[in-house]
Length: 177
Image (cartoon, rainbow, N blue to C red; front, side):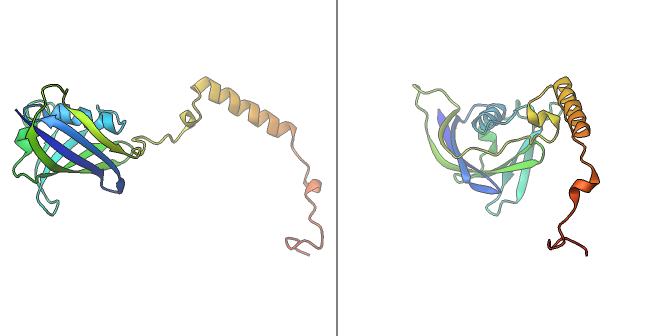
């Protein structure tokens, strides 16, 4: 049986790299899951593989929509390979759309002592798929956040400083006189 070795790089972060080996008869879904696991992303988000030419122009797309006959479960990794130097683009969602360039770097006879797919090499941590933008950023539950916010508001009211405490000395560059 044939195995493929792929090099993956984030489109906007060349220093982040993964090398994954997978069997030719494994599903694109397994490839998708191994990529997501290698970069610590959530595999349930909308994603797609694009078969691209040498200039990274898309020729064909396979996505993880279940209603589509060309979905991840019904497609083998070998179905994506049209040349010994095949390029693919992997697109996955988060707070933004992440693009990963994939290049086939080796075709070889599989080693039956190894489990595939497998991560062979990993360089640098991937950026977070989702950036926390609200009260959950603090790691607090809703009621904990609301309690903390109320305490801060009360403290601010109790420490209200009168305006005469903000007199700016005449020799200060901020004085208007």
